[in-house]
Amino acid sequence: MGDLGFPIYLLAGLFQILLSAQLLSELVGSQRSLAFSATPSEWPIDAFELFEPRIGELIKTQCEEVPSGIGIPAFQPGIFKSDVLQMLGVPNRTTRGYWPNTLAVSYELIPEEVSLGFLFDKSSQRIRQTEASFTKKVDTKVVLLTLNGMLGCQITEQIETGLQQVWQQESWHYDFKLDTLKGVIHWEGSDRIYIGIWEADLH
Image (tube, rainbow, N blue to C red; front, side, top):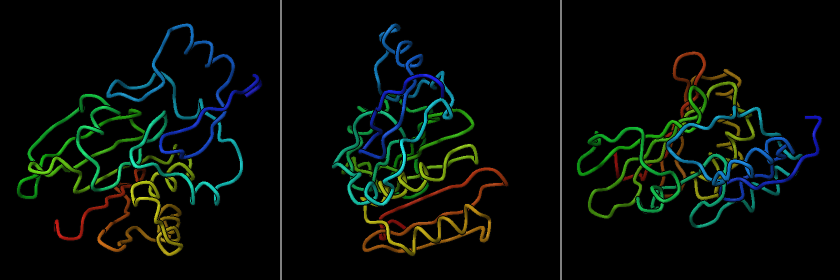
């Protein structure tokens, strides 16, 4: 970008981005709230610039108990449904969950680029399974940091390597277990990568 940039921090402290003066003035001029909702953004993901580098530092420090701010939300299992709705608004879709006593909701955060899904326990109203999918247009750092947030900032080197292998299409499927969580990373078709993480006793 040729304009002077202004730093803004993504959800859960994911990473710092550089927002151009033009985009910032549009936000201020239109009095937009700096938060994601179920209403698709007018700006494509490449309108935002990564503020380099510090990825290792961010991996260690990114998470808060509940995400806040703007960016790609990273909700881990155990977070309340009310916190998700407060952050993201009304879901694009709500259906009965596949597993007993669950409710499934999904959001199209950035059409044809980023989607989120959640499986809530109907009794506790907490997330039992959290999902995200990304197309190849999304920067791999965004995918990595979102995955880390979905794991409660406990990503391991092995899981990070598994993600990179799938992203680079060295493998089409990678599953893992981390403490009380299980997860899977795989390609859906040829242009969208899916990440699912759930509490191990769910299925």
